[in-house]
Length: 272
Image 1: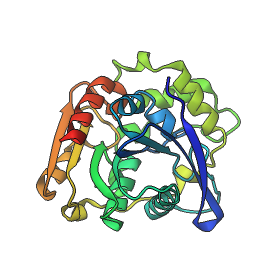
Image 2: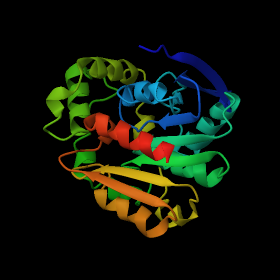
Image 3: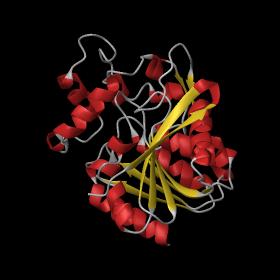
């Protein structure tokens, strides 16, 4: 299997952003979502090798508060903080232009980065992107209600990590969650402060989607219980160049639950 190269960059606030990369060619940046133990490599473990094999240079950053990046306590984790620190790290890594692939919170980060730096993004691939509704509306979703956990406490264990991951997918897929993924996310979760979730602050970027000038490909699970699938309509109504694909019997993790289809359709979109 292709080996991932690693780098860490200093960003604003005295923090650091860690990233992994592989391959050569046009750049594709995968931006992971939130949740205990999330990281770039774990969220896209079934995807990035196919993009490398197709001739792309893949970048897998860990957002601030996640993976091997800085995990400050006592601060608000705002969408602007996630976006600015990621952008600074990517530019320090020599990336001037890229396709952004974002899931959940990572979708919101990808949208914000494109709005802030329209010259940077070439295309957007968004899987159940967050930040297109009011934050209070997301907190009403049943999946987020079930994410109440002893995360960050001394009793947090592998079984609880497995349950949290299971919430992200359709019940049919839950038995297929790899144990290696559970262990990988558990190791990260044990290093995270509760602030990364409890003090997350995200705006509603829905009214600004019409400002996106790049082609947008949106993928959504019909049974997503975290970000309502009806959000796909916002992109169709407002964006100049958007296409959406919805998957039945699929939850919040299209790139995991429908990995083969996700890889195939996204690569076709990038080539187009």
